[in-house]
Amino acid sequence: MEYRDLIEEALKFRENAYAPYSNFKVGAAVIMDDNKIYGGCNIENASFGATNCAERSAIFSAVSKGNRNLKAIALVGDTSTYTYPCGICRQVISEFCDENTDIILVKNANDYVIKKIDEILPGAFTKKDLQK
Ligand code: THU
Image (cartoon, rainbow, N blue to C red):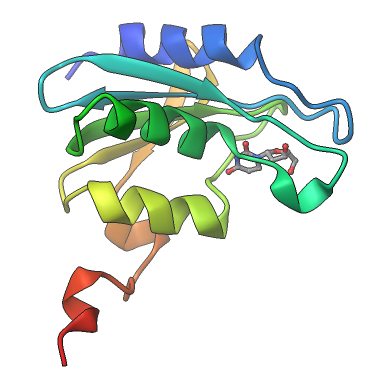
């Protein structure tokens, strides 16, 4: 699958990052199973724990619009290396993805790697673990 548009969207949304405390801007974009794309950025807060990461901003936007099925998510940070999702975001991704969902770690438009949830969150705690 060609991810150029998704990556462009993540780069575009990174410009909206509100990161006055860390000065680390992150952008994310998701493509859902209806092929719609939603973007997000990190949004920090003076009460640091209230910060929302870019991936969660993008996913929450898609879910709020009624789509819960992630085909792929692209993530771009503010360094010359690939930025991996934080632990909380891995958990949120796992709620709405399946084993085939592409998790795209972007350095720039021409340089990215693709991971699957099982590689970055093995043994995830999911819905099925709530069965008694
Ligand atoms: N951040 C993200 O947006 N996504 C991640 O997966 C890693 C961390 C943000 C949170 C905070 O605003 C800044 O990066 C530094 O931690």
